[in-house]
Structures are given as structure tokens and as C-alpha cells.
Image (cartoon, rainbow over all chains, first blue to last red; front, side, top):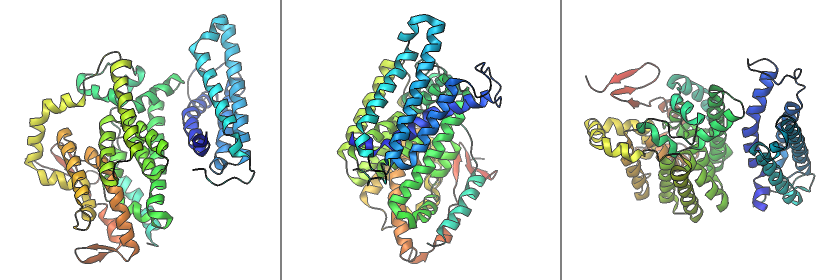
Length: 140
Length: 329
């Protein structure tokens, strides 16, 4: 856990690089900057898009304090995790309405669920290294 | 040294504009990212399956809804930004904040920036970035992880860089373990996850070795000079050439001959050496200037020297935009 706490900013950077392009691409489609079929919701009202944008924005906001282990950064990451959970629940409910209960056993459900659990374990595991408001010296 | 940041700011955009940028392997990119576990390329290109990092990343973005072109721009754009950030971080660590800009000017004397900008489509920016981070980190676990990522980017070049690193710095246990784990993962990917086993680079080398050697033997000096360009001035000094460094140069030359690539392969394999020399030259510049054949040379001259790079493409020697010479008539 101490390695994860020391390198959490790198992990968050990697996740932002993985997630932000898809979210920004979806926003560009929603704003009709890119010609592609949209979600059917009015512009910027799709719950999946809103939670996705908020999640990435909260993770980006957490970055500046992560390397000095500020408590505020941990709380922002926890809020991003809640957004991810909301996004996941919305997606699962939508898929279940379309495909029935078998959607619960689909890889599209199980992989994000595994990711959510792993991220929650990491977040709570590193919490004690992010207690100080002013930040702590870099962990070795 | 005080002028270094201004010089670097003036020199770098000019260097990028004059030497240009281009993309490569876009067709192979489309084919592999569309189905990364199916071997669909022609045998001469199948070695690309052994270095899956950027292809898997591109495939992931396409599954997220991005088009081929958008995924290409995102993966390779992010690679270039990552390279710039890690180079900044690495030069700050090696040369300190006051020597960072001077380090950049010295390093610009090698074709490293040219390689990153003119082979957009290869995984080189990621490979080099992971290596730059490996040089800066002290955590053994992080070093091992970065070695694994390097091998995922390019199995053969990463192994060569890690060998060169071990020759220069001495073998670090974490790097060796990371390399073994990375190579094991790469072999497992190639033999078990892909639908069929792709042809390797060695098949190409063996099939073309005689022809490649003949082409290099015709103009050996031109190839060697173009390989590092003005950076040879820093490297080919009695004080800089130790036995370990000569071994690294011999290894880089051998690989360049075998692949017939005296720009990209030579420079990438020599990266550990380039960083060591850059740090030494920056230290000399702090003490009044680099000593070259008994004369002290300042940073301004080194910035101009960076523009004296030559590249070889087939039978052509290329300089800046549109300026080229034929090797044969």
C-alpha cells in the first residue's frame, strides 16, 4: 500500500489518459462537433455522460495535491469513485432493461465491477497516508 | 548557462520545423488495432505483434467508441506529450533545474528528437519515456514495472536499452527481474494469446543479412556519422570514451547493421549513453564551457551544431526540409 500511496498520482494520471479521450469524444458527439449517432438525450443531459465527465474532472482536480498527500485530494478521488459507481449503476440498469438479467453476468458488467472494487480497496488502503490537510513529505 | 532557456526556446521549434514530422505504419495500425489478437499482417510486418503496447491501447480506445484516426491521434499524441514531460523530469533530475535547458540543447545534438517526431506511429515515445522514468526512480518495484512496460512497447529495443543501461550503471536486480518478467509476458502473449505465432524480426534479419551488410559496407563512415550526428563531438573524446561506453556503441552498431537502421535503432539503443554524456557535458558547461580539442566551446555553438544532423533513407542522405544528396549515382 505504501508504494501505491507514493505513486497514486501516476496511477490517476494513467487512468485519466485511459478515460478522458473517450469521455471528451462523447462530449464532442453530444455537442455535434463530430458527426456520429448520439445517445438520444438532449445535449449534455445523458446521465452516463454527465457522471463520466464529473468523474474525470474530479480525478483531474485531485492531481495537484496527490504527490504531497493532501487529505482534500483523497476526498476528491473518493467523490470521483462515487461518480464512477453512479455511472456503473446507471449503465447496468440500462443494459438490464434491454437484455434482461443476463446483462448482470456480461463482461461489460463484471469488468467495471472488478475495477470499482479494486479502486475502492486501494482508496481505503491508502487513506491513512492522506490525513494531513497541508500535505505530508513524499513517501519512499 | 543563463542563456540556456532562451536558446532552447528558440532552437527547439526551429529544429522541429526544419526537420519535420511524419507518420508511419498507419495501415498496420488499422489492421492490428481492429483485431489485436488475430495475426492478419503480411509475414514481413508480423514482428509488430511482438510489441503490443500501443496497439492494445489503440484497440482499447476504439472499443470505447473512437474511430481509427482519432485513436491514432490520441495514442501517439499522448505518447509525444508523455515523452516531453518525462524528458523534462529526467533532465531536471540528472542536470538539476539550472542545467535542464542546457541538457536539452546538448541532447538535441543527437537525432533523438528527430526519431520521436519522424516515426509517429511507432511506440518509441512510450519506450523512451518509460526508460527516462526508470533512470530517475529509486524504487526497485517501480524500476521492475517500468522495465516490463518498456518490453511491452518494443521487445527487442527495450531489451537492448536495458542491456546498455546495465553495462553503463552495473546490473540492478530490479531491472533484471523486470526484464525477465517482461520477456516472459511477451513470449506468453505471442505464443498463447495470439491466434497464430507471428514471424519474428530475426527471420527478416537472417533472410537479408548479406544484402544489409553489403549496403552498409559501401558507405560505412556516412552511416556511422549520421547515426549520432553532432553528438559524436561530445562522445568521441578521449575523456568520454570508456571501455563500457565503447561496448554500448559496438552493440548499437551491430543492431543497426542487422536492422539496416542507423538512425532509429542506433539512437534508441544508445539512449542510456546519450543521457550519461549529456550530464557530463552540462557539468563541463557549468565550469566555463565544454573542452573540445583544447578549446572551450560555449552553449551558443552547441545550439547551432544541433542543426548539423544528417539522416540516411535508402540511398539518400537527408538534411533539413527538401535538402538531400544521393549516395549512389
